[in-house]
Image (cartoon, rainbow, N blue to C red; front, side):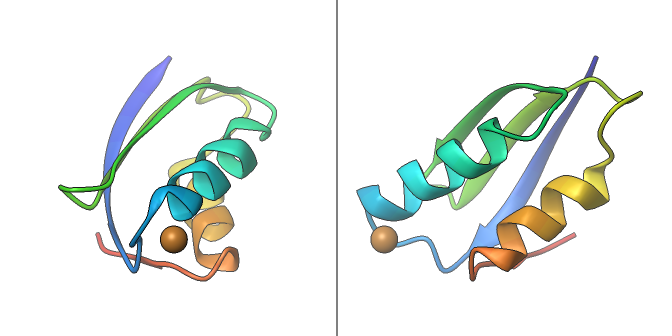
Length: 69
Ligand SMILES: [Cu+2]
């Protein structure tokens, strides 16, 4: 299990939070996701044999947000 924290720009409301939580949460291998709107942070815990950090980043970017490194 791997835990990462991503800096995400563009999240502005509860809709953004649930959109990211729902979509990233659906990725096979993702165990948990927590979006901290005020901090602009997204914490993700996942099985590194099934998912990579890049997969998670890509999914968030496809939803229209910018992911910092
Ligand atoms: Cu929003």
